[in-house]
Image 1 (cartoon, rainbow, N blue to C red):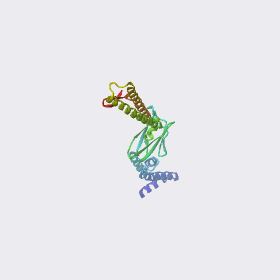
Image 2 (image 1 turned 90 degrees about the vertical axis):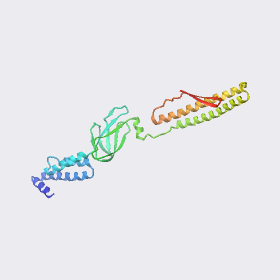
Image 3 (image 1 turned 135 degrees about the vertical axis):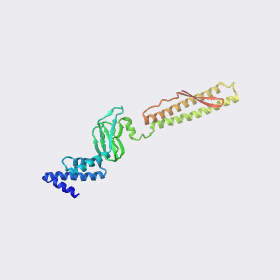
Image 4 (image 1 turned 60 degrees about the vertical axis):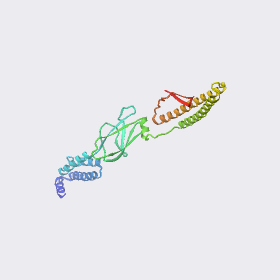
Length: 268
């Protein structure tokens, strides 16, 4: 260390201005080492660039050049790619990291960052901002960050929470009422059919046959109403959470009475 100061003293004997330059170079090298050891590689790099300049003494410049190369090897970087909901690339995006502005526009180039866990916030005009938290390691070069702005992005940022709209609860209640009516009319129709088989078939009165047929029709109406309202409730839930309405695969249900009891059939 004494040899360093002797060399610097001889080199800086040209005057006070030269001495100030020497002091700035030495201070930059010392502060750069401190920041490097604290993991603040970007700030350390800037100081090593200063003390590796041609204006600095050769002995300082040599050390700073080596430290600069080592920091460049360790310094992580990220490459941010932003797209709109239509798939087009977005350049007018402001990027901050832990509250510090990294870029006002995206140009496709890598952005140097310090190692550690950082929260990136991306802001595009008239669109909800996007946050990403990443752990960046030393030597982690050109780490990609892909984001998509748009209507679907807002839902993704909320963690895709599941919700049931009020109308689905109402439709669900109507569906239960329909199934309750189905059970009542179905049991009545089945009971009437079995009673006629046991007492008067095949010569039962028209009024008894009509009553059984009426209950069967009402049971089918209740079945259709219950399934329709249930399907509508499900559709509303799906639309609420995905934005896409499913296509119902079944187009018709029919309840009937047979020798073994009530039967249920579906048509596609």
